[in-house]
Length: 322
Image (cartoon, rainbow, N blue to C red; front, side, top):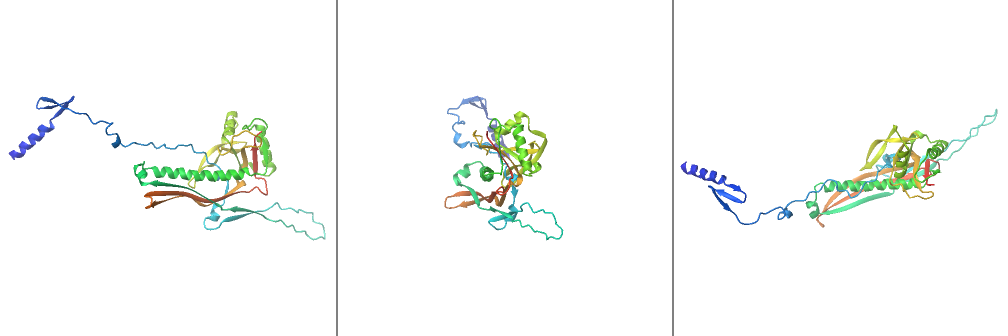
């Protein structure tokens, strides 16, 4: 027991060692040590570098077009490579009935529009183990989001190409480029009504300068705003409230060019049924480990088709530069 008490006394004395300004005090005597301090610079390779969550090297464009289309996705979730969309023409042949004469029967031919499921788009990346092990743990989720966004952007781009191909009618700006005046808007609305397109089912989509000009003119109404699809990412449609102009929702898309020049589109005003879309396979993310490369492979892909429904009737207005 005395031996143990002696040991504890010795340990307590050791714990009592005190470092004071480069000297060690032991039992009242100060002894100065020699040598350098191992500081931050020496340990630099052992100190991990931290990355912030905001690693995007680009600004994502606003994706707004997919929710503005007629969606036929449910028809092709199983099999099939095309959707036949029949259009019933206006029934004609209204005739006065004359006494004692036979009724004359009319014969209208259905017009068929083919929506082909002919687009299979993908984005692929491969991450070697060395990079994955040393990278931020959220690397995969960030790349997955970026890859899904690229596919969603491609869908909107393909829809824009269909709008560019023609909506059935055009209105040319009366004055400056990228500026819609009330008189221009009146022409657009008159064209829509002349083609029996209800304004409650139509939407404006314009380029950023035109949208900014509408704001500057105070022409956008936020009191009569409408709910409309605002984004498309990994098969999820987010909705939000947008302002209105002449009673129709207004959204902007940076996919629409801003280059000045005669007949260049600065925007559109169209019926929701102007373009049809069918997603046979929504955006999916798949990963697989490769023993050959000692790396993880990641692929995002989707299968879909888009088609304008304006070949046989007017479904909207292209707004052209002066």
